Image 1 (cartoon, rainbow, N blue to C red):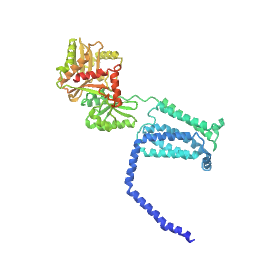
Image 2: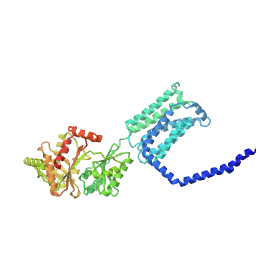
Image 3: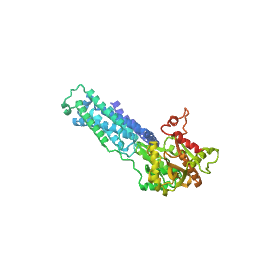
Length: 541
């Protein structure tokens, strides 16, 4: 008896104080290390947040598929026996249906989670919890419940990554994704038919409710899944097509024109075409012109406006594309701005080379300009003349210019391009001076003249000629325009970009360079690459 009484004594006077002291010490250590623990948890969340969209979306798809397949297989009899005293039969039946619906919802939401949609995060959170609870209630399927809770924990840990305020169904499902969901549903039905092949089918099965009624539950769940999946697919297919990309308003174009007038780059004038969207800085002193094609948000050139506003503006554009699940692309940018785009996490790809000619003291004298001199004299002997008319005189010439433009398009079997190239639009052409080449008083070739602020850069955009114009008419236009630019005090003439020019052909060069070089050399049938680069080589000498 004395020996038995010693245990309470020892527990109260030895073990209890020891346990209390251990708890106090542990609590003190946690308190002292709270900052380090919090920092470690934040670091883990940041690292996981970076890969959360891919990891969580894949895990969510797997969890949803497992819930679907679980609803098509019979529950273990011994587990159902444990439930029969605690779970009413109606609740068990409803849990089976809810578990299957939760699985279908998770499979569909996996795509939106990959796009980091915030609404998908909240809905997936509750569906995972519902799936875990339904798995336990319908048959003590703790394996599915544990997986659902594990994915829920992953979702919570990476919650900061799901911050895009987009609609769950803002983007159309791709055919491949719809086929994947359809195949999964078909596999679910097939598995159920295989699992219950020993059960003879009868219409009464649809209305049987029993603890061991796995086959009737499978039939009802399959019908519900097919109806739900088919309904979502039908709504998706009948949804109206997304609206066309919005064009800038007249007020936006007028605002952009004021910024373009002070821009040092001549291609900033492409914003006045009106075929690109405009993103203005908060203060309105700079803008990015861009267009959306598929998932790509493509900006044309560098930001237009003061250099001090560029960094914030490109980050704003990057964030806007990211919120909508798009890829950010900056096309045809200056090399000096590459660090800015590399800081955005973008990758630089060389597409060609830009030709610049110094107009300071430009002339046709010297051995290097012999070919230009001969071409110029030949054009003069053919009776060609050159003039630059101011913007105010362009509207009166539009009918004649249109005939030249239409003839050129018909000869080339092509149509107007847009975006990075100008096209024949009266309102656009009326913004600029126009270089004309005449023969016997009639216009046989023309080009609109783009000039930057401070006479730093001169260029042309829309170049058109009549098919019957004398040979070398465009060379003559270039020569005369450069001579005119030199007399007017412009610093440089921008010849534009020669596509795929200057790419490396070395065996160790990047694949894109080698492929681009091959296209440059062998693709003359589709595009005059050599000619585009050749004219730049002639004038750059």
